Image (cartoon, rainbow, N blue to C red; front, side):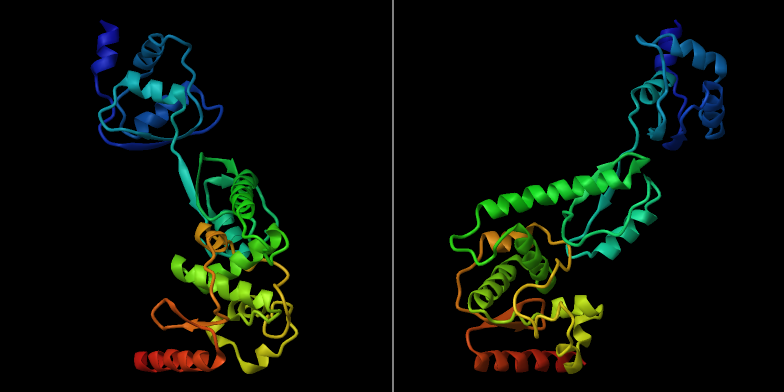
Length: 297
């Protein structure tokens, strides 16, 4: 009789968010649930708790209690610890300062973190439960990036100009900031690889913009002559560190790199790029880009 009653009587009349903290007594749990207009009494709660096959032990965490739940269903939910799953997304092209800020302002994560390295965490969406340590989440992100980086490095082209996985990560971070289009990214990658092979400077606005912490559109002639180590207009080779967190497309651009003779590229003003083999054509492409900017004014 009681079993049928508790299995069939609805006690939850609307979807309800419920936070159960550690070491909360069952009396306090009942009181908190009643304050959310869930129709239970201490007597019914205790009687229903004897129906379960195992001793009823509510587990701490965040719950979303569905509408039309019975008392038995509610207790099973708390006993099995079917808590809410939260998520955190690291966006491709994000920087360490952004990642740290977003982790620290997330109220569902716990623990302190120090300054973070660029490039080493994989852009993706990660899932966690309330109170999950930020340091553990970062470790997951780092392992994921290392795993993907290893898979790309294993399939690198023969006679690859990049010496190690760190250089691969650095170049991928630059490609990430230069282009969000995968087809373009493979061509951008070919330009940089060609330049490195020819011992030419990379001449990338995004590396300098990162180094002096300005918008890439605000780079001046004076900045181009600066001694900043990220100034690839002045210094040969790659910058000292990654400049962003590159996603799969940017890394795959170096795995499925297009073989071209291009050594120049410039924006077409519409989210893609124009590529060229000679400086004379590059100058024409720059003019086209500037003309497109003037049309938008």
